[in-house]
Length: 547
Image (spheres, rainbow, N blue to C red):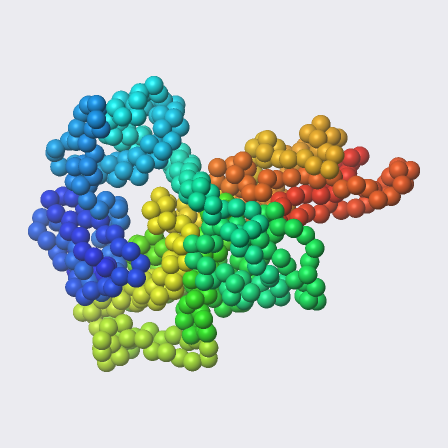
């Protein structure tokens, strides 16, 4: 039998006849106040409640969360053959696997229609067949055949799945850019581009004042002119590198816990989550919304940021509630304390707890009631489960909801919500900050550009690649961070690194005879992170010196 726990979402879903309900909400919606009822024959019926949490019952295999199938019958009803096609929708009630397949089929169908050749190549590559043929006219394609690709996705590794979804994501963005280009909205320097002047010492404030009101216009090219801390304009033209430098520098400043808008989780990975004290800072909510646009711009342009967000926070951006067990990823100590209360053998009244939490911000203490009259409601053995879930729900969902909604508004000015739904929380972080904690040297070498007189056959270049191949993974990541400001590679490889990884030879400013004594070798390598460029690689005589 399943204990009755209170839960909360912004909508209700029922799990009956052996099927599991899926709750799917958008950020900002309100929560109700009902609960989780126990039903006959071991079935569970989910109703709207005030906690937003469901703990996995002991002895069960766990609960499926947010499968995202809003109306599988509707999907089946609309998946009819096109003119000249064959086949039709299955009239039987689909099982849960079929629901998931048709949901992914619905996501993939626009992608395959827009890029039919690429889609059919993928299907043939994975020996899918089933009605889609390379030479088939688009008008006779059976839309149900598209779902065969979805079936394959459930049989292949997660790595293949995410690679395909990232390709889809980039394809959606490229299509959006093409449509804006057709409308004359994405041009070089000129009336349609955005010109900003940024003071080095006030990068967050200047960026906020000049860009926050633009909304989706941030999709246009941004041309940045920097002013040094001494007040003098810095020389240089922005051909994309300064825009990247601006995005990485403003992210580094604004996401720093010292700035006050974001804090770090108490776990070892120190992931970022909005600081609840930002609600009490002047323009705090608006600043969080602006940072959503900054992240959206980075995703839109394919620029990696060396930061990762808390799983709980990303869940809010994806319109999903978090559950009790996820509290351990946010505050392990609080999670342990709640488990202590839950399994306390004595009289819980001895712990002197009530239905409130205390917050401290800007030197002031705020008492928050977890439910109306909570400060006068003591925790007992009868209601301790409600207390545990109420605390967890507040920390995981309610506390950061206003800040998450603000960030979401900014993010979706540039990234469509449907694009975000291609990924889960961990995949979103990989999309933002890159993939594995190592570098594929062959991939990097195949996507490196040489300038200033270097070629792939230059002695210094050959030595460079030999040395990099011998590096430890951590050392390779450090090198990548030195050159690009991000320690990880793009998910789809260095082909998608913006700008392209470049090794540039700087002209020697000493007489030729002086280089024989090693003066040129004394210069250490440098980097222009805004252009992903490594410079001064003049260690042509010694691998040891280069290393």
